[in-house]
Amino acid sequence: MKPVSIGIIGGGLMGREIASAFARWCALTEINVVPKLVAVADLNPAALEWFKHIPSCTQRTADYRELLANPAIDVVYVAVPHDQHEKLYKDVLLAGKDLLAEKPFGIDLDSARRINAAVEQSGRFVRCSSEMPFFPGAQRAFRYATSGALGRVLEVVSGFHHSSDLDPNKPANWKRWSAQCGEGGALNDLGMHACHIPLRLGWKPHRLFAQLQKGYATRPDGKGGTVACDTWDNAQLHTWTRIQGQDVPMRLEMKRLAPGATNTWFLELRGTDGGVRFSTAEPKTLWQFERGEEQWWKRTELGFGTAFKTVTGGIFEPGFPDVIQQMWAAYLLEREGLLDGRFGCATPQEAVASHEIFAAALLSEKEGRVVTL
Ligand SMILES: NC(=O)c1ccc[n+]([C@@H]2O[C@H](COP(=O)([O-])OP(=O)(O)OC[C@H]3O[C@@H](n4cnc5c(N)ncnc54)[C@H](O)[C@@H]3O)[C@@H](O)[C@H]2O)c1
Image 1 (cartoon, rainbow, N blue to C red):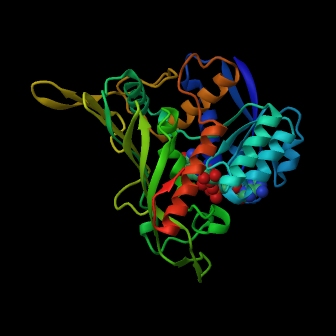
Image 2 (image 1 turned 180 degrees about the horizontal axis):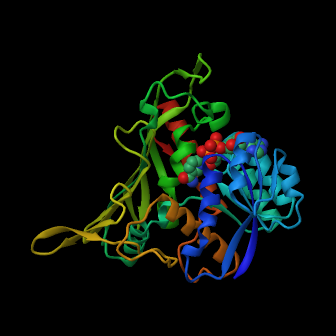
């Protein structure tokens, strides 16, 4: 096992999720790289306190520059609010570290482009965090799309829904403020999840019409008062993409106000000969369309068929912590040149392409028209 020393900047929701994925790395059976979490930086003392659970994580600091000065660290994972992406990602690269950085990879398109330029100049190995395509059902749907089984593609739907903004009493956090989340709001927050597989398939929209909706204008501030919230909460992008020389309708959906949904990622591809549907609402179920004398949607229970093999029994069902770990396996193996054709993490170029879609969506909403990318 080759150890890779990791530092985490931002020990909040995602920083802790990643730390726990490393802590059960023994679940992976056919991998010769092992991440070792050695340092964490966070401004919040309570966030740093939690990392005392991880014995190898001996450097806990409020100043991320101290973490970057640690010569033992090979790879840095950054999970901080979007207004800080550009500064921190560039500082990681200047410190000579490799980087796995959270989406949306910059607060807006210009920022993403500047980060990408810094990545190219640095020569470091950099990827953007986007784990949902590592669900076995998503991987099967991706392979189905590349197999030609769809025939002529008629329709693509890709999206991410949750409903935690439906509760008006939920206190505001930085994801509800444009200054920190970005003007894109839900686009920035959830957009990479919807765009990752279409972009990997080469299905970037060339035209789109966007419908964006805001949520509650104010929320509790968590300190007894209220605070204004200004981000877009729901986004439906009606796009056209070019597949096999034809214009194909592709709908990209990102919703924080989707009644009943909790972190539901879905992909639906329909063609003249075949079709495939997967949703994390049914994490081991794959639907495939077959056209014969009659037409069928066939339901398969996939079980735990992850790309990177684990000790988990094949009949068990996968979940969010599993795909986070699978994404890290992909990152570390690709960094070693050992991905062997398996699905890799989102690239900086894909992150920039996702921001081009978000920027076009904001323009479409503002001007009420179809925008050409
Ligand atoms: N891949 C996913 O599924 C997924 C899910 C949620 C969030 N995210 C992304 O992860 C990132 C973080 O989101 P989160 O939900 O973990 O946020 P969070 O608010 O839970 O955590 C962010 C942490 O960063 C810390 N922080 C802020 N500025 C800092 C600085 N300068 N130095 C050190 N620490 C700092 C905060 O104290 C906080 O603990 C965002 O880019 C978000 O879009 C990704």
